Image 1 (cartoon, rainbow, N blue to C red):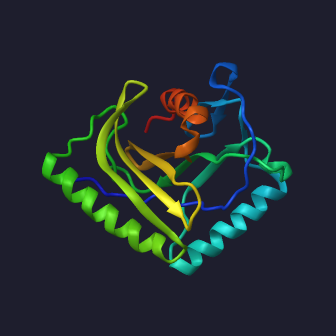
Image 2 (tube, rainbow, N blue to C red):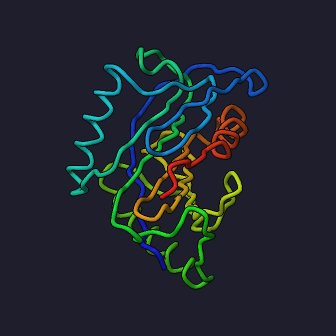
Length: 218
């Protein structure tokens, strides 16, 4: 079984606002250097400016407290309005991260994950325990564990981890992490949104997920 990489968590408590219906949403394609491309809905924005500095500072502080080293390049998209610190009535993230290792550390991007049923069950149990331990120290808990599975994204088979987590008494957030093995590197796509706002995000972020294309094939 290939190496399992835990997701880097960017945890922020945010306020609420109103968003357009999914039928009004358009998409913009973003090209990601040394990775590929992804289409992002018009109700999201690339994290930038003062808010990005604030977010990165907070994330690094949290990771430092947990004894976790932040590695790899990352890009974050969030609900529109946060860069200007506007009051936004929902929560969503699309995070793309790349961890670079050595030649052959991971499978080829064109290969289907070859996990057996027993390996999937083992990986799911290990990941759940590690995540529970990691989240406990920052007020988060897993309220539903969907486990590890193999998903089809843009005609590629990838490993997926999905669960529902909650920060204190805030609305639960659905989290889905997809792992794209690419020989000497691992591309990780994390999609999350508040479960109660699924009518806003689910359809749009499903399209975003299926638009993710790795063109820098190693």
